[in-house]
Length: 513
Image 1 (tube, rainbow, N blue to C red):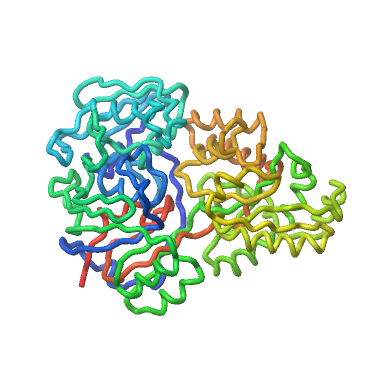
Image 2: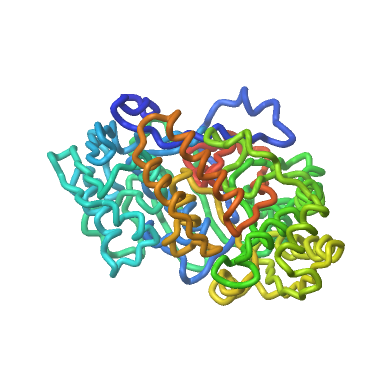
């Protein structure tokens, strides 16, 4: 079966997001260019530390995800349309979205020459349920009621309840497949497009092309070196000087510098990334629904898009589903800046003239400037906001969700279910505003097991409406992802899961002098 073949009709494809994306300064030769072997490139991620890991279960940062996709493969894979398609799994099917049958590809080998079998898959998935592993997907893996081998190439996964998004979940980097029994992560033994030749946590990862990669013709580059450059200006300088050839997470303020270089290009990916205002519903006065409504009417969304992100953003509507998502609720009125409505709600809340702190940090992208904008407009309607700017270091452990009002920052998720389950479900550990809505929780479970896509869209639409009206979070814009690249690199395109083609660039790009 072709690697991009569709899943069986009995199976459920992961929620396909027809997300907008595009190359800025398009290279006319890109489309005509044909892949060629050879070349060595250096890539700069956001960070590098002694916590760098070769264990997919423990991946915590984008640099980890890039490293893992270079070295390992998953049962499924998600591309630009964010539809989950077979990868190591030749097919994955289910009649009831509870019991899933996985058939593996024949003849896939690990880097050490061992052949992939069902035992490797069983072991790789079940290890996430072992508390000693410390998997970042332990909560998600709780739904694996049983994972067992039904033959050398056959696996049966039984879930605790129906989940139509299992193929999309299995495409995430944390669920990449290891050889059964792997315990030594000083090196990597995967089935991915590249093999590790040097791994120095906090310094660099060096990989070379896997000559026995199971995807015919892939990959193209001989070597890739991955490093971390935390400072954005330094990353851009390294790109423009030729020290690196591909960088992640360019700030909109740096785009003119990159676009001014004839040797470099900019890849914009519209995404579901957002920075949101959090108003805790279990504290006062942020738990007052009129206060929440007033704050939502104080956001000048076009100004935030223009001034903070130089236009590299999409207007949001106070729920986490972006306008380019197929489940997006189109008939909800777009909330806009309205000082009269904000003043009315503030008066109803009895908070006119009250001084309230709001916590912001560089760790939550754009939050300091957003807080200043809210402070200015708040003053016009009788609300005194005190902006407490706190350092990025330690923000997520010390301040996030700890104050009545502050900011969060959420990366794109592959499915609506994962996004709602992690950040909006009443008992979710990352339920930022402490929102508790029984109707929302029931809809979430119903949508998770619903096979009919029309019905799923209807259910997710009602969930968006509930969040729009009642949740204690406000999302003003969705932030585009910006990567910079040497124009001799070909094959780049956008994948809305994250920068660097959803962290999966390694097997797709080639070098052309």
